[in-house]
Image (cartoon, rainbow, N blue to C red; front, side, top):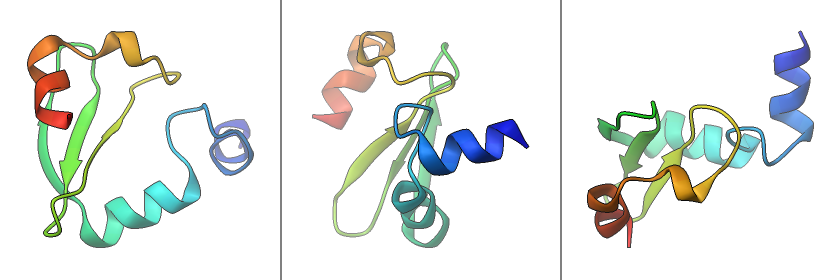
Length: 69
């Protein structure tokens, strides 16, 4: 129950509601890194990451950093 409230009200805890809906309807899973972060893209060329734990951009490996930028 606490995880549900964190996901709704706290943007730095993994993903927002908007990102969840975007991922659910248009996201195509691309891959996962050694930290457990999941990478998605859509048909319009947008790319995003859903972090395993708290949002920490320094936890993106260099090959995924290049892909996302």
